[in-house]
Length: 413
Ligand code: CA
Image (cartoon, rainbow, N blue to C red):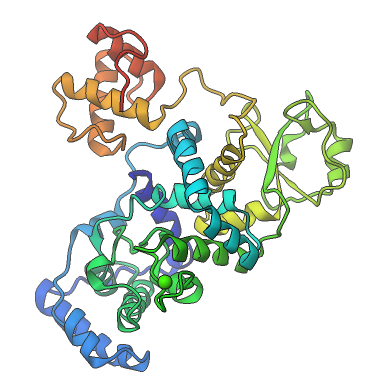
């Protein structure tokens, strides 16, 4: 999915940004071969066989397009309500419930072994790879080889490149199945290669940790990741709450956990209006869209989900999808906008309308990328609106009206 680009940036950027010195680009072809040759000794020290290195690393050619992606700043920002509207739509909730049914036995065994419940595991799966359907198409060794030898984070990517060779050398996943995001996240769990080596498990018992073609391996590896991250069995990630008038919102923040008694004393209630569960562990207040939007009290398990990709919006998508898979509905408090975001079905309809109006945006696949956003901005300009490139409800309605389509008539797959 298109959101994966920005999410993967979150995954890849954290630590070393402050240290990122711009290395001079080697003269492309020769410099690249020399760089790979210098990695040979490091590969040997990691126990990677010479045959594997010769077959898969020695003659790689760089792909400069990943360097552009490494340095791309998003042209348009995405409000959290757009992000969640597409990541947690009815379609993903329905698909997830079907997956819970289909993999029930495996998920039960996974819960017995790792202590993470099926809805949470399946929600991570649904957000990371759309239940194993969106794995990324870029050859991993090409992307990571390029990033290991060029660009501003070579040290980090060198490790990931060598770890990819290790995965191949150990026979877990064939090289032609190792494709992923430009930054190297791959498989149904979208792990980086180093995460794979630390946390992937073989759960179907064939001796290989195959996060590309084995759903049981992927589900168990996700649960293992969460367990190692400190998952507390039987504890909820949190819940939506309502705040009393005049509440001091400076108390918000994922790291500011307080005893439940403190939130109760301040007048916080469940979003349903009921009292907070007094016996619950400490929780922090999350206001992802500021004081006027939905509010949540989140606990340790929310932080464990957060550690999967280091973005609160991402963790909230997984947490919310897990609730939907347990039969829950949408949030009680609306997002603070009069122009909500679109589900993937709505995005596909909007894209079909844009195509019909002559915009060259490729397929109507529900992924709102750069071309779609630029086409939207042109339509917004023509309508005299702010050109923020958002695939929003109001723009969909305007284009429907222009096409003479009533609400719902133009929707479809
Ligand atoms: Ca396996």
